[in-house]
Image (cartoon, rainbow, N blue to C red; front, side, top):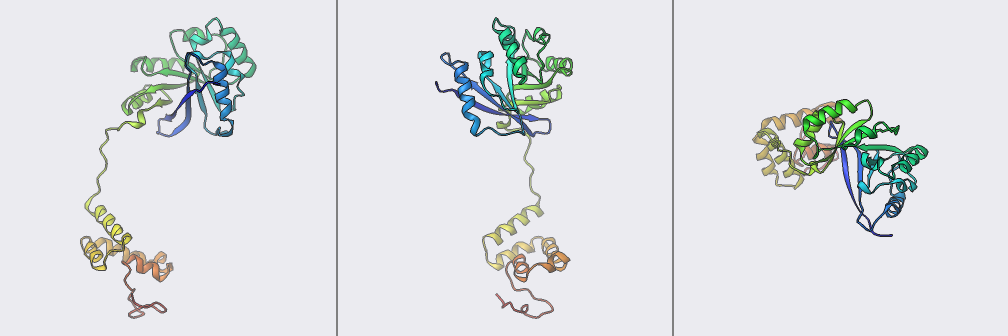
Length: 264
């Protein structure tokens, strides 16, 4: 078997949640469907059972021989309209009718004819690089009753949002690797000081240094006191309360140190 390079992309919905995985098999000129089937069959031991769908794309090389692969229930096979209408199309259509896998139709200039051949499509895929946003919006509306619209080859977060706004249910691509351009939220002074105090405690800093940090925001000490004096704080062991107060001994109605606990 020839080695087959395979790439993986995430399929992301409107809520920016990964709802599926897309595996693309990059077949060279010397590779065929036999190599694709062997590669996919070799994934049996690591194939995610059930749950999220896994889309399989072999590009324009796909034909009926791809269905020699024992397709898992959560697998979706991508076919272009040109492939379905090619001279080998009848064999592919017959195999689809026999094995009935989940199919995603790649929308291309021959898609209108491919939609009439009787193959049930669960998904309709649109190449975001081939269509304008206005075209995507129109096509999404016209094919909504036929299959779930998905955008492929989305490159930037802005393109992703535009495709979703145009009516696509989800999108796949490398857009999530690009900066979104949304400025990061900055901590306010109080939040920054809380982080500073936590870091000092974590590093077991000197008590005086922690006290100086606490003095910068009296509200921190007040909130700690409220927590310790609350029902939740009282239930905590003494050493935990000492930790909250920068590891100093707890002083209160029991005197210099609590019963059974020596001063630090």
